[in-house]
Length: 550
Image (cartoon, rainbow, N blue to C red):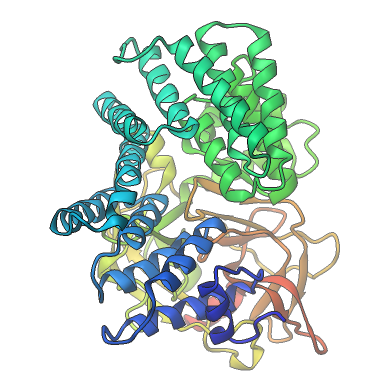
């Protein structure tokens, strides 16, 4: 029987079960677990927390994973596995410095308990995670020294814990260094690539349940194509990739992990099919659009589209999910959409810039997000002094700026999902003034009316999920219903964790609502029962809340 209460779901998570719960119920269950850990004297088995964090990791709920791990960390001694999972969650949420600090704590705890077998078992994974941190930082900064440090971390881990997974990371990093004219010590790249390929093929045969050998074989062939260019190796890389994508164990976490490697280390651009990495990236992009109904684009890809209009016609003509004109408009709105982080750089949600006049405020631009993301009164929300806002388009131009909040202009606490009785209050919104804004931002356009629900009426969501770049949710984007008070709207637009605070657009790319939650069992506005839907607060209701006549 599926859990119906937060306590029942919390118990299932502790058993490492994930019964595909409604997102709101999942958040309640995670908060319940964190509250259990708050009193240091409460007897909560560490294995329960390990199970919870691991199952949340598998389903890419890194925010919830981080919350549970932090609750343990702040009230109990350092546990070897929980500490590693907490550091991994911090990495996935973009808090690289904090992740390094957590690993430093683990190393100190291991030194203080040299006979603790848990720390001995986790030692190699700590080293590999340090490699991941340096790899991600090198991608962001293009610092070759960090790339070398990442390679050495993985090579050290490979020496103590040989595996095809570690081998392919060393292979990718060393190949990247070779492309930059730096030869790092180790066996010849071609020999290493053949060795990793052989290990992966052997593992795929001996353990067909594991999808990772298939991804590794694909990446080894990609490396061989780079080392010894030829269509044969790229064709093999594609073949292994299709096998990986078709594997029942290749879920969103696994797919995104390899896709990220292709994008970041192999510089695979879906817009460039002249390279093998670009061909693989295009296959990934189509797969994600088809299976997860979203299109993600990093800042450099967006910049390339802006600088080369011909790419639009070449790559998006005939696309069923959206037109070339849609992409042009998406590029225009991108500078206005930001990612909300805490002081450690942990991604907490999304927000967007709009003209201050839309809310009766005498400022050129204001920043809009959920109250459950930024608020001094909502539990677990960021205090406004601790909030930072980054804009991906700035990063693409070499501007590394975290914009701070100067003042909260209006806030309204969240209400329960589908609860129209709370109208006109409980809008789950915070409107604030930032101390600075990107130079290319002009604010998103306000829709003059709420669209009428129909099978042909679309609702598009654009935001920053917690583990990736800017994401455009475009397919299956049907506006399902609007409550009679025109305060809430429901739409079947796919969103990932971290989309809280995203703008919801109509078909003219004007803002109609603020996204705040979703559920597989969302209460219907009309009649009884539930359905699968996401929910947004209409911009008209928010504007009325700020005192604007609409």
